[in-house]
Length: 19
Image (tube, rainbow, N blue to C red):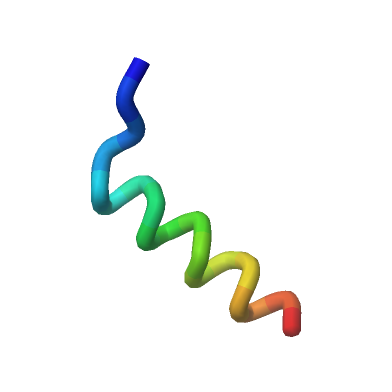
């Protein structure tokens, strides 16, 4: 299973929002 580039970007954005 390969994660989509957009998926990764969304994940990082969500983490960034946490900080």
